[in-house]
Length: 265
Ligand code: SF4
Image 1 (cartoon, rainbow, N blue to C red):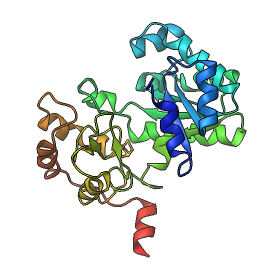
Image 2 (image 1 turned 45 degrees about the vertical axis):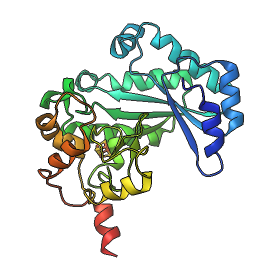
Image 3 (image 1 turned 90 degrees about the horizontal axis):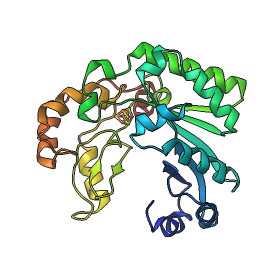
């Protein structure tokens, strides 16, 4: 846990609705109360399975499951909106485990399930077998809609609004990710950089990046991980030089439905 977290939340509270994504490790009742007082609105705790050994195995950390459950209980006591962020694997989908997992979250009294899927961001997932098919994405959209109609828990599936039928992928166009070392990337799942905020203003780096990203109807990362693999030299994110080389080979898909209507006007 960043030792300056409370101060960071305090400094942003007047301009932003602040959401903290955390594994839950290191959360105490005192810290949670302090974060709430500092202006924290939402928290999302990582939880990838309802079975302790599975979650600990996925995270590679014994005790991760218990820390997550404890943090959920602590934050529920503060009145902060509590969600769980989960990376859905293809195995979970194939074995019809997603509904079992959602039932577990409902039993915990979670406000929102924030679902994403495995992305080919790191070397281990640079293969077709790891990337969700369009059919699988739509099955999660369907599941989300069903649960939201039942109103037992809010389900927020990232692949829903990022589908071409809605907003599509806005990586680098509206979306920006600045990592802990100051590198500026199009989104958290795209390990490429257009510069570092320690060398240039975030705005200047963002504008340079945006010139390369017109926005498109499907996930930039799912489509371009083979190019990432081609330009990878053992360093993540790719250097700016390698990123620019890679971008020369990127071909963007048509705009999403939203962008098509929005930019037409
Ligand atoms: S590349 Fe685009 S669609 Fe894929 S995760 Fe990033 S923002 Fe979302």
